[in-house]
Image (cartoon, rainbow, N blue to C red; front, side, top):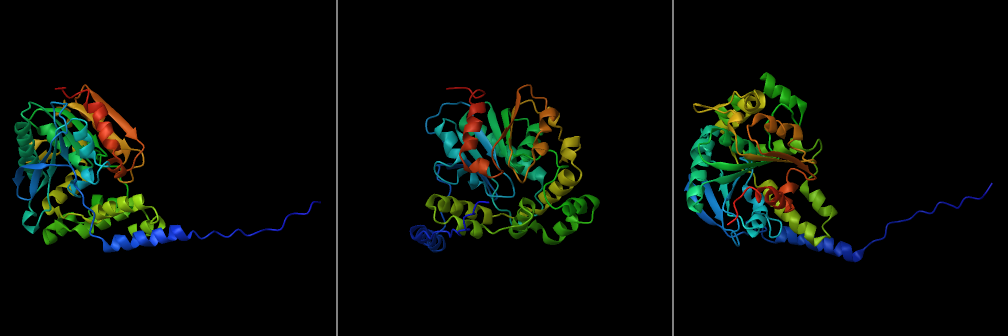
Length: 355
């Protein structure tokens, strides 16, 4: 028998320069002001209560039909314009589109009675009219991200305004599939979790509760952002991205109580949008009324919205021109990498009149 070589333990080497960079960057994170977000030039078109309609002029206008972004009620929309060269809005204005964004703002206790019907019929509808008038066009492209996609789809189903194209990304349409603790779903659907009583008492869903909810849904075990930062703090580019993402993640907004009640009861619990039973005000929301060109984008690594939650809209609308794609991205990374601007442009450029 041959003689085996003795086991030799290999110890990791200590990279002094790398460690110096790690701790230098960590010190800057906690000593410097918060990073600036929202770099793309913009101007205010219209304001109502806390909501603002922003216009981002094209660098050199190429397309007649403007893009109108509708973002979620849960988060602030600056994730779409978070940093130069990583901004969805900047990418699209550079490609020749006029871009509009409805910033819902942060509701206060006095807004607790605002429901989805108010947000959609009084705010979104008016903002779309203003954008059409401001851009002096006859049609518009509506883009909804996450819950903003749900809101955009509901609006498109009852809109009298001329919506040429509807783009929805990481959008929940069918609320039966669920990512998160099963007991949550069971409790809400069988009435053990009483959303109505909670809203009646508190009026708003606080930012802390919103943050906790997303952490519980996103992972069975939550590791703080600071653990991730420590592991890669030697990389200055990573640290800069982390600072902006951490700012956005912790910068949650309250959720108006009546709107959350409708979201929980009508959409999540009863799944009325898919069933064609949703009513806003005195209007029945039937997705079959949507005839606009439709583009649905999902992320294959999305840990919040499953593809099977988005796909049903393809069979529920009456659109003749409709496309579904799944891209290699997560729920948030789709908007961070600049990838989404290219995805939108590839489809919308063929459906937006060239000047």
